[in-house]
Length: 116
Figure 1 (tube, rainbow, N blue to C red):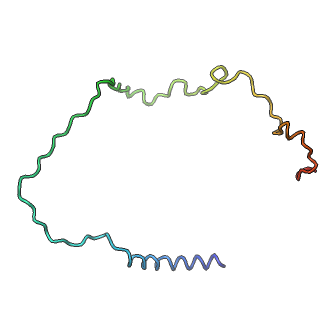
Figure 2: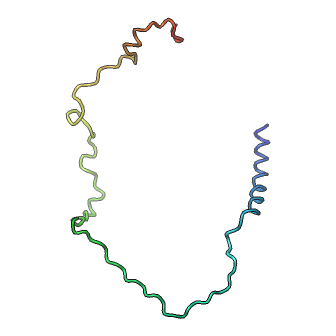
Figure 3: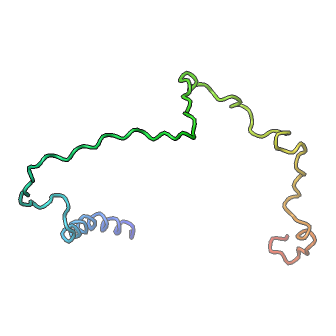
């Protein structure tokens, strides 16, 4: 019931709140008309010529790839990134001990809350 009342008040009150806020906030939609300013009748400013691209002499030009190779898969795309002998150890990890460390295993569990 409280949720329904809140929903009704929100649906009816939100538009009223927006209308009240719009009366206090200045409108930026239409600029105020200003008197026409006097424009000088001189020659227009010259348009600067476009500058050529900067080429660094230290870097070699970029080779453009052949467009027919864009849809081809990468070499070795189906292979795993790491495999034994290429960064992974050859032996498997030792089996887990159930999460108990030796310090925890030697404690008396009589006062533990989950002991049966």
